[in-house]
Length: 375
Image (cartoon, rainbow, N blue to C red; front, side):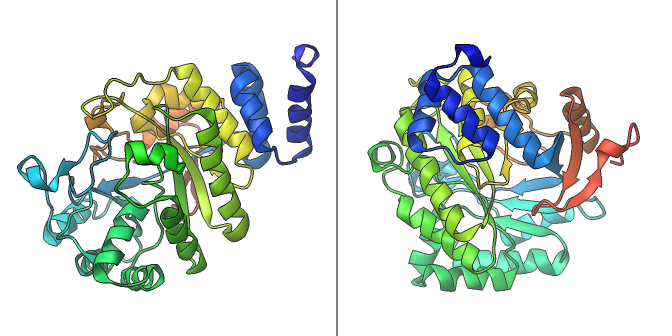
């Protein structure tokens, strides 16, 4: 490959070889000039250095308290505005606890709770929810609420980010998902989600969580009206914060889907563009231990393909408990995979499946087991 590369691309390849950080300029060059094969091989080199041929997944399920939302993000196919809430759902604490109880005796390790921003579901409501889940199943890891939900919750309760997070930690919060980041750059954010928490607010919430000992994930919604520069700006802000706190586990690029939302005229990215984005993210986000392809959004075959482009995590079993992407027209309309199917999916891609908990402690290393997979 090397003899046909420009000196600039050769220099980037050398940096990756040496384990050196690439610059924003390097990153732009990869987006503009790096072939899919070139960026894929660099990303894979990094992934193998970090994790060998291991691919991680977990046994998780989602609870979506409501799809009623005070915000009107242009790209959202999920929420129903508070004014039109007859099309929406609003779950009580009892109903959500019932969902948790459905998994009694089943070896799930994580419940993932995110939803719309509902004016009546406040800090006190969610504190009670977390406490009820912990009282019922103390060992279940609660990964809950995006920075958008926190921002609204804390402002309404008139508490600081630190005070609000501490209340929820005391009630049982264990980590924070990465949603609501979208694209940080104000030029794009103002067009796609003007009314919700801005980049500084999102980053402050995650930084505060890290300082309180709560790890989190980070996302980026790509493939709509943003340019390469906006993606790089977004990833740089995350990389800078990770330099300060080390509190992020995983970076999760999320593909924009155009069904049933206000941006339905915007074409979706091609599979090749998706794979290039994953690979370049792996190269640029050098201080993020993990890169995740969220299979319900990409589809299982495409998630499999992403494992050759720097990705080392494909999320979890999900158990058909999320509607956020199926409502936007994702590949998976009923997202559920058994542990056995996930293990198979990873093996078919020539990788070694490893079941992890939310914090990437190994629960079950299937790479050492040929056939028997416990359900």
